[in-house]
Image (cartoon, rainbow, N blue to C red):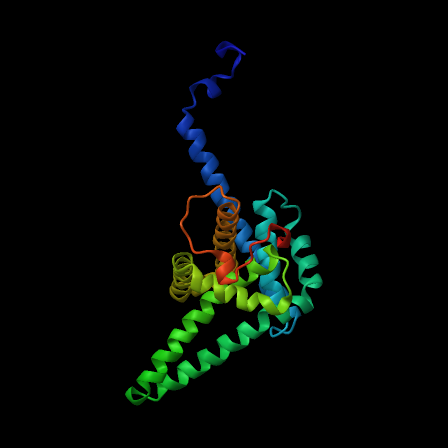
Length: 241
């Protein structure tokens, strides 16, 4: 088609403008998805009585993010509800132990903090454990929806990911801290965006790492990382969901 046959606005529009608008549209779409997932997470966590609702709700968010990345978005609410119902038992078996340990460490940290300077050593040790378990929790939902493993192995696998890949793990922790600080400064974000944003970003980062991990195992990456088989990490592509 010749330039004369094109609309005047298309001919004169600079490529950078179109590129900028596409990026803006994509960013708005991601934020809207985060907000929707945040509402779904809160609603279904309450539906499960909080204690039994948080784990499947977190897995449902991770599943929706993975489906979106694969181009299989569909109806987000329907996908979330279907995943939550299907994984109500399995997600609790895989994720609830980590959540309980996290709550116990948080409670102990507050107790040691209230005890004053005499409890500095156990307080710091508890803080280190709290950060480690929180980072493991950043990997868990994405690991659950991406790999097909026995449920008892997900916690150990996420711990191995955390220890074997310190840079991605620190990035996960940084995202968690950034969202937490922003939510602390702007509490109004909590019911509308905070949890959805945290889980969305954690899942996105985790899935990118899993893809790089699988590329390296396939021999298409030059990343000189440790041998995943020696570390006990998932290596067989057939184990992927």
